[in-house]
Image (cartoon, rainbow, N blue to C red):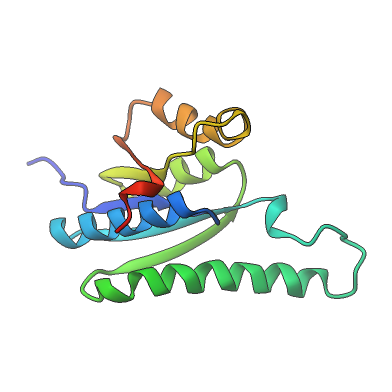
Amino acid sequence: MSHRATAIVVGLAERPSAFAALDAAAGLARDLADELHVVHAVDLGDYPVDPDIDDWERRADAKQATVRARAAAVLHDYRSIEWTYHARRGAPERVLLAVAHSVDARMIVIGSHPHSFLGYHYSGSVSRALLRQHEYPILLVSERSST
């Protein structure tokens, strides 16, 4: 008897396409009766610019709480699904793959980036790296996919 994956992993960042991806992943999780794992890869953009300010850690924690709260707001309309929020340090593609492996994911859902020089050369590397692996199907969701 083969094992059936029952989890969807979605990458979350602070940009509209990531929240469109979250909405799409939540709809899939609901329709497939899967668990949803919302993954935020913590990077330097999540921290205040000056690490010497007195409340640097508090500001970083507040930013993480804001990202999680925004995810919860999107998922409010999907009360029937079970979801877990993961915030981990590391390269986004590695963090997503690690969570996908740990939960035996069916697929990974991420937001696509606008076709710009910075979007392609900076953030687009996450989708390229994920598309090179062959263990999990990847669903790319554009900002225009949201309703």
